[in-house]
Amino acid sequence: MRLQGLALTSDTLSRIARLPNLQELILEDKIIEEGKEWNMEDVTF
Image (cartoon, one colour):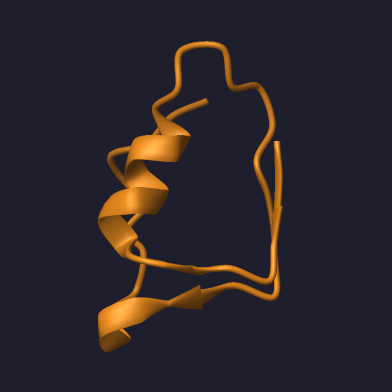
């Protein structure tokens, strides 16, 4: 999945990353709203 030029919350990114058939996630020009970083520690592909 490729996501480009979107403003997303860190919670939304975590939900996307947990999609059952997701094999690849490409993030380009992303803005994470609320000024937070996306914590990927709990997400595995």
